[in-house]
Length: 538
Image (cartoon, rainbow, N blue to C red; front, top):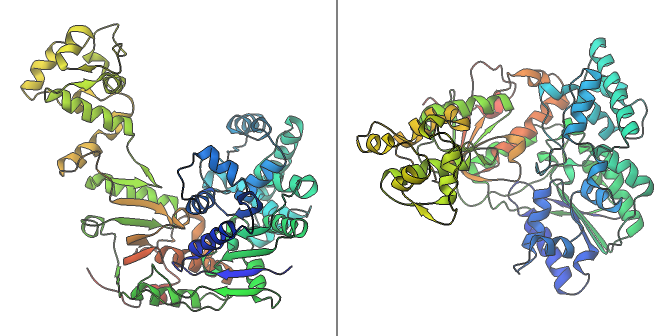
């Protein structure tokens, strides 16, 4: 099967290239939107390309109807098998299974995470091993033994536990007539109906598992599209732990039967970051040799041997990238202490309703009137001692405006509060300290003390490198600590070293202007010659 392999290093416009191809196909009438298959590793990426090829203000429902095959491969299998939600393992199913077996099973595929996999945790380590086995060896009954050998799991107790968990999970799904994500492909490969597609696009192909490649092969074999585009970059293949078959993508790119389309100009990576990234990529043992040019900007690269969160983050927008969830947690604790406004994994660290309650109360304190809908939010977080019995919830109109006096006279707010407000002896954190507010009061006060408004857009985002893939930011801080948990052993094999180089390569190339690499002296870091050849004091 002939394929066009688009090799797109960081920032070279791979998505734009594919978007333009799709655009041209639709505009020239070569195919309708429902005759094009665009399958990406993440839901977000598939939605992005779908939205970019449309210029009209269509609703989400209209877009899904017009572009039914712009989705993940899992979603395609789900749709073509005509599955329903009750047939899929959910949170309650995993909880029941855990209760029955006495072992912890968790839902790895929570709705809305945007990915067909989730990051491994200590809690789900055994389950991750099972998922990896099915992703890599879907049709091999000896799959677990192969994975045990690959990950060098010599602990027979752990082996026996994993095999028993696999058996328990299999029996539970059979008895309850349930499916997991890994089961979609088996069913699709055997009985799934392939849509008739004139053009086929596979994005982020370096992250596909053996199981997913089998689905791609079936689509191309049966549908026989006019053209097939396979886009990716093996240097950015960071999901091997989830079963990504990097070697398959590399082999396709080296197959003379396929056409290579190299993208050589990065529109994101400045020269200083490009120099480092190139050294990292060239240290990977098994890769596609490629060259690409940086944008015409030197940028800035800096190496520090401590975590300068209080100094480096004072201005500009920042993306702080960590290798592990544990390091993310530590960084967030530091940002809390400094009173920085920030996001973690793309979400605000403070409930928006809490912010709404604080700001609404502040307006009431200043003598302003506030809509009843916001008063309702205030009451939901209010200390019960501040409200008379029988007024635990706000019973006014959501569309009317109310003052402090209105709340005192008609809605149970205690009379002394008004006087205390004027004498400055009662502030928002004295009144709004119920439920989720109490544990965040110290942080919120620190934010406000430093002159920030709670509804300001956070300048800082914290994430693992894996969760940041596809993103970019002017300023990136890359924490290289590999001293935590299972990652300490990742450097013991060539494959492990290659995988870690790919991870940090992805992290470094998120930077558009400035890259700060933070070295922790506690970690015996294998890649120091690459990362820290320009070590600086600061």
